[in-house]
Image: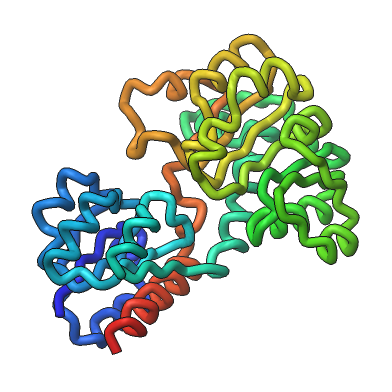
Length: 309
C-alpha cells in the first residue's frame, strides 16, 4: 500500500514518529503541504491513505481519490475544516484526527504571544542583538480580564494558566462544561459581544466553520469591544477579518493582534501586517514542539493503521 505524507511538522521534526511510520512497511511519498486542490487532483487516486496537514480535501479531490485507491485521511492535528467531511462520509472515506494531543502546547504558545506583546520582548531582543540598549516600559497581565471564545481543551488550559497568573477569567461557548466552570470560577458570557465588552484579552480557540467565518469583524470591533482589547489567535485565520484588525489598530480600538495563523498561509510577502508594530505573527507553530509533534505523529500513524489492519 502507498500513502502520502504532507505535514511539514511531521517531516521536519525528528522523533519516534519517524520510526513508527517506517516500521509500518508502507510505501511513503512526501510532499510539503498545505497542498491545494489543483495539486491534489492529479495524484490523489494513486494513494491508499494520506497523513495530512492543512491540505484542501474538497469534494472534487475526494471523488477523484475514491475512483482510485483512497480509503483514509489521517489528519496530523485536530482541525478538520479543510476536509469536506460530508463528501468523505458519502464516499465512505474514513477521516481521523489526533484529539487531545496538543492542548498543553497551544496554551503555552498563547501565553508566549501574550507576554511577548505586553513586555515588548521581540523588539527589545532585536535591539540588544544589534548592540543597542533601548528599553521600553511594558505592562503587567496580573489583574487583567481574559476571555476565551471556545471552551474546549485548549480554551480550558488557557484559563487554568491565566488563573495562576492572577487574571480574571471569562468564557463564551455554545456548550459549557459546568463542572469546569464551577471548579475554576469562570464567568460565562452568553454572547461573543458580551465577552469582548468585558475583557482586556480575547483568546480565539474555536473550530473554523461556516457559522463563525470572520466572527471577528468590523461590527464587533467598532461597536462592542472594550477599548484596548488584545486579540490572540491560535485557532484559525478564517475566524478573523484581517482588514477589520488593521482598521481597529489604526483607529485605536484594539491594542494589538497576536496570531499564529493567517487566512492565507504561507504569509503574503506584501501583507500589511508586516509593517504594523502592534501585530505579532508566528508561522503556525503553536503545536510544533518536539513533544507534541512526536505525540501527534505517532497517533496519526496509529490512526492510519487501524483502518488498514
